[in-house]
Length: 284
Ligand code: AMP
Ligand code: MN
Ligand code: MN
Ligand code: MN
Image (cartoon, rainbow, N blue to C red; front, side):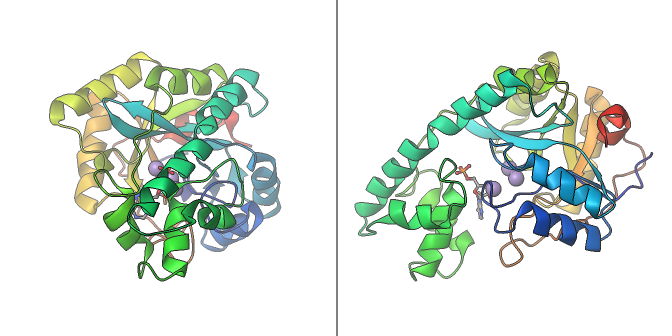
């Protein structure tokens, strides 16, 4: 295996904040030529068995996946786990704890929105959550679009759901050390998701990469739906400098909302070590 592989190792189903089932995603990925696939729902691995079965049915290879919410230097950072044993109790317990605060956070968000005249947003968001344990800002965004408060989900995030806006609630997620530890302890590989999306200074990003590596993290997303072409090049250079492997994933959520389709991003640049080269034994 080398960098020329249609691997899509980042996307979401109804088990978190995507709109398609694991089976529909598998079919869509396969139709787009994906050869190696991972479903990476937020803080939840309840969709893995279905995703794996559907992937194999479609003739794709599969890696177990998850995207864990982490708080690092007062920002939310996402850590992807790949190729772990989904039966690992410590990982399951860690994810349960990470999900635990979501319902209260969602109620607090709804209270905040009420102060600007938006009523019953918690009940509204819950209607969009395929998994009631996993209410996310995306579900609020869909509800506020459906009820005509905003035209599209991007606008909801801009006006209501981001730092400093009514409806944004500060939340403490897992620590970087714990998230990387849960993944690697379950035999998987930890990967920093969409690094260009964070608003870290150069020094803070250095701290993220070096601490991540110190905890046993081994990969970084280089080609992702959240990066520009210039950022592919920046982070291809960064993974080489830090001695980390490179990953590729669309971060697809929904046919209507996502600008990046499953399996349609450029290949990884040739000079990097792809994560799948280090995960060969975990791919089924
Ligand atoms: P949460 O985990 O509840 O904080 O929700 C985070 C999710 O919100 C991300 O995984 C994205 O799916 C979505 N999201 C974050 N920012 C935006 C944005 N600007 N536009 C659309 N969706 C966003
Ligand atoms: Mn999401
Ligand atoms: Mn993410
Ligand atoms: Mn994601």
